Image (tube, rainbow, N blue to C red; front, side):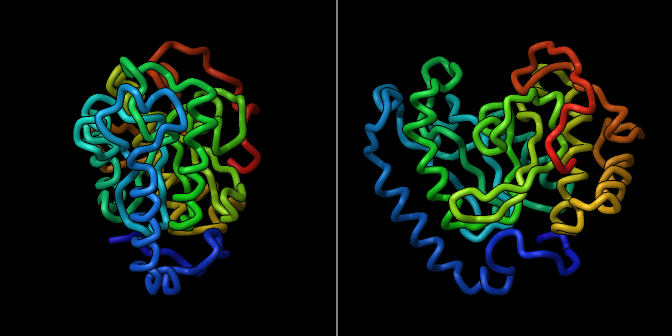
Length: 268
């Protein structure tokens, strides 16, 4: 089930009805792309992988999540976000009325970096065109970046996650007009539990963004989204607007100074 939304500007290149008619075509295009990458050797990560972790979900999803790269469980099972961080992502989705099959989930790099290290710049450069190809096929309206690597790539920013989580930026990616919405990587809540409340509140705003479309990027829409984030059905969430929340670490759970609230992406 997708959250209902009012008529809004077309942020994804085609409306829901037109996308629904192209499910088979999009699914076939994604499968062909996945097949073409099965034996990919464009970077050194190919030497240590069990398999390429391509992506999973609806081929015409309005909401696309992009993380950093596969971990141990993802490399073993061939599906992104199936470990503890993935369980939390599934729970957060359920809190806004969505399931994994309603969205599309992918990563910046498709092969597991050794010992779960950060992906290197040359690895991101080699693999990110595949992500762009996925985006061009799916044509999402909103791209939710999970953590700093996906955010840096897709939001084109050097700002910290502390400064920009829960804010939005309009961009054209792979020829598709999208809204990029950065949030902390779910792993941040595993290493620093205080970040769980931050994620809950940001997902509440994400729901409003999906419901309102471009209207959410107006001052009135922003106020609506912040109000929606103040009360959450998730266990452990406490009242308090987005401006009152201060996460305790970055996307990897490491301590980071709180950035000034004036450091932000253009829209939120």
